Length: 121
Image (cartoon, rainbow, N blue to C red):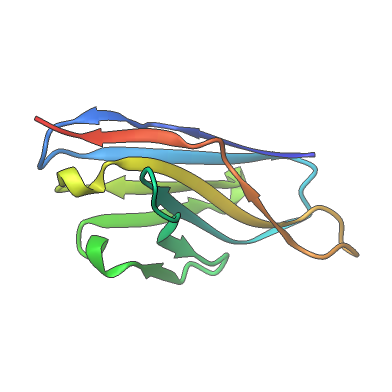
């Protein structure tokens, strides 16, 4: 069993910052890519940023230069530093990880429970 537990969301004013964390625990053999997605009501979940186990990153255009994704492989944890936040960044943010639980198993995607981030004055 694998769990992804997120923390760090909340309410912030425009221009402010938030830092999200997501820790994976349970039966884990290896973790490939980890990432963050977000979703607003009545819209599809969208990719925010991803990071490979080697540290290569990818961002959606709307957050480039403002958000930074990082990970600590020893702690099976991924972070999202969000700066210069805008009201349009308001969403539920979900952590994602591509995990292999046994050496002979295929990898599969796991999701966190989601954390509400609201940017409002």
